[in-house]
Length: 391
Image (tube, rainbow, N blue to C red; front, side, top):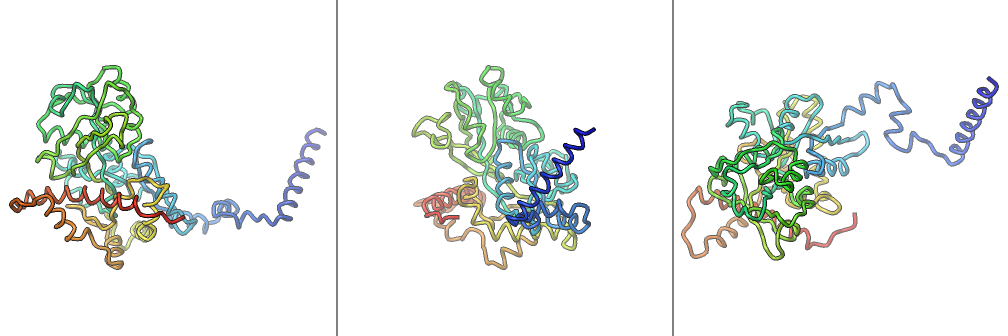
């Protein structure tokens, strides 16, 4: 009993000592951070309201992927105390993010692939689903990677082979299914989580692994085995409606591409999407607040230390068959930010058709998609060449 009383007296003495020293140094926790303010005001109705009023949640992607890195970047730049808080949530892939935006309480935004909604409609899983969504901006292009043994020289060589396309709740499954179907190639799909599928490939249990993500894509960068390489994906006509041409080099993936070589592939746009909330709702207000902060601070994302894929993002880039979030469209209009200048496309077109006949409308559409990929690459190179101002 005496020992307990003694310990209590010591604890009280220490507490008073700490308080005195804190007072001497003028440490006022309530002035240190909004988090400490919230704790010291615990139970306050006003605190609860303030914490929830301006918090926006973003469903990103799986650990190690580009989505989750973009989500972390958004939170890092845009978090501003109680004025705006961005919560980035680790997700489970593009299909799951679509479901989360539609049905999961509290989810405001999500990063999804542009081909996901089309797939869901074409396969009969949803009807008029795009009407339920808006997009804040098109993000970057995600390259498709086909990792296989060096005996596999083309996509046609995968006919009848066992190919892992990740789990069915992710975007890789959608993209791989679309590509093989449109090319008329019928492999045996295996639905295996990416890290496990890489090990199975090395063990000879499967013939190829499909990945899709913005370069540098961590799981592809870390795959090292001299028996394997990246298989080219030709930008064939059946793919030109929804996909863009892309090129991978030894600089991107020295572990899978020989020095001085390059591998052609395709890419699919990633989209920052939201539910189509009515303008007079609280959820719309929070999204509008997010847009204003995001677009205003956008130049910060295109500088180190943030993901290099931010350099490909053009806020005003249109997205075919999608409706822009009205507050985002209004911000772009007010700041007079236009999509890619027509003259730049005309310049590109002249290079591609020098001395030849003018392309048809369908060929022109395909060339415009090639131009978008080319323009993103030009912007990225220009960004790298320009001197970086200290942050």
